[in-house]
Image (cartoon, rainbow, N blue to C red):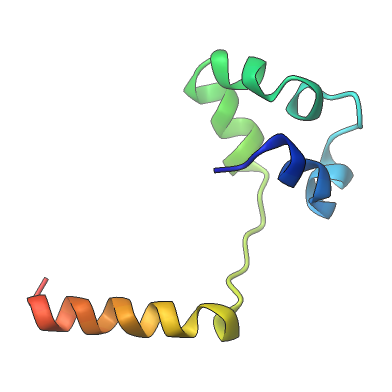
Length: 71
């Protein structure tokens, strides 16, 4: 989940939204407007890149779990 403090720390969000934008000042208000508003703020404008070095152990464990359970 994205919190207000993590949003403030995001370089991308600072480049996309001004400091007084509701995504920073009233994240619950953005959330309360419904899925479309939240999706626009949190998903549509994001450029997510996975740090493979950091997540490699988690991904390996997930793959092993899938193989063991034949999912």
